[in-house]
Length: 357
Ligand SMILES: NC(=O)c1ccc[n+]([C@@H]2O[C@H](COP(=O)([O-])OP(=O)(O)OC[C@H]3O[C@@H](n4cnc5c(N)ncnc54)[C@H](O)[C@@H]3O)[C@@H](O)[C@H]2O)c1
Ligand SMILES: [Zn+2]
Image 1 (cartoon, helix red, strand yellow):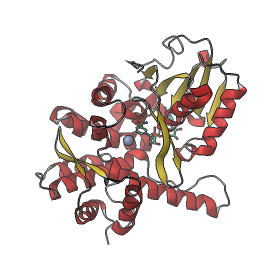
Image 2: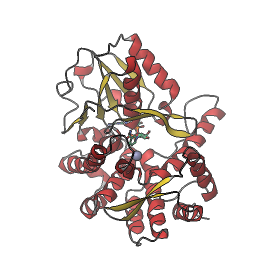
Image 3: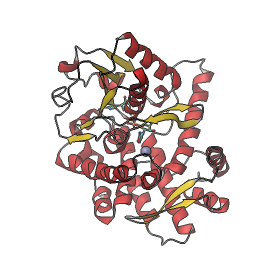
Image 4: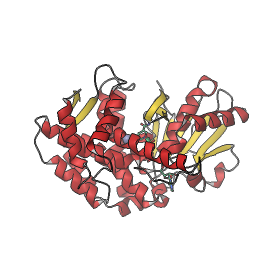
């Protein structure tokens, strides 16, 4: 299996392609918002620019990207360079794994979610229907090049959303990182300085350790799903609502702004912490997580009634024979996996974020 080279340095984006592994041919995939961050040194490369947002992580957009790769005559030894957030690296990585049965690729994550999580580890995906990440491959990038300076242009709501994913890594890591993360302000991350670089590095290290132990997500890596079992249900509902909004407008632009991935993970973390207590764990963590999310102005209440979220969770569960896996955070750095908890506990856990009134 390929070992991914990880480099974290402010200004790295400017230095591309010098830091990239050699390749006879390169192709850039990015999105419209990130395109303007590309350094002039990449200007001569063929590129495909996606419409920004989760709606691009779909089958049709994947097909367009594959057509573009084929149209550019990309050979088997070519390198795909995915520059952008998790949408670009998930979709780009999947296209790289499919074009001519697999070409090499490198990720340059430009969002906080991408830098601490999505770009590393080789999980690629698109969404199908209401199902998040239902089609994908494992295709490990040769390099993940992280420029914390890229966070400076990231819209503040995206930066805040990334803190949901940062919080997940911190809970998995333990008290030291959690305490540090709790005290961080979005502005410090936007500054892209030493504190941002250090936090990104330490959060990513949590993932690096788990992926090294379990590259194909059969065991230890599933701990990274902390907050995601609930989170994906919120995300699926949000995607469904956003799709509805587009349909009403007859296939026009996607106007309804759903939950961002990191926001859904934040809500999912609160439910997971409540579930941990319901299943016999000590209280305390849920209040800490909730306080952090509030301070970062991230949602702590879902827009959907508990029954609706439960239905979305059950829909997801139907795809697994042995019931859904929940990761329960019992204390900072202490989590355990629980397969198929009783539905009444899951329902009660969802009450942690149920709409008021
Ligand atoms: N493969 C994995 O292991 C993994 C892990 C976590 C998340 N994900 C996936 O990642 C996706 C979410 O990623 P995301 O939060 O990065 O969303 P995203 O890729 O949609 O990016 C968020 C927004 O920020 C814009 N943007 C990106 N970088 C920018 C910059 N530097 N300056 C200005 N604008 C910028 C984008 O155009 C987009 O509008 C989800 O689909 C999720 O499932 C995958
Ligand atoms: Zn995630």
